[in-house]
Image (tube, rainbow, N blue to C red; front, side):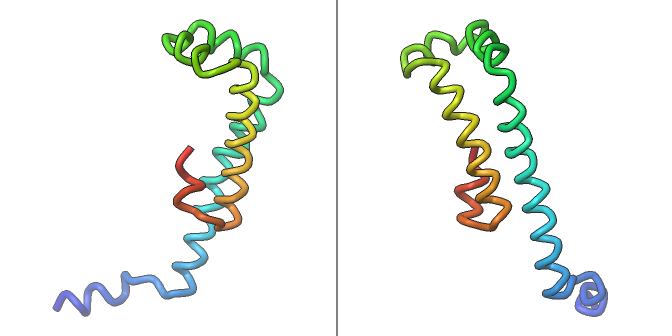
Length: 94
């Protein structure tokens, strides 16, 4: 009984691959657009970091300006890797 109900609801292999690609690309756009958007707002990001409760921790790790640039680059790089399907689980971690 359940098998006859479940069969029409199960997508084909082709549609599963297409859906996976679409979701992967749209998810990666969150990282890519977010990372690229922060490149033009360097001072604003540093001001926000200075006002955050994590300010002392960030300063203890390293230069906030350098860490901010590295963070943006990582967002864009991992977003591109996710869109291309390269190491998707690792790419989706940031």
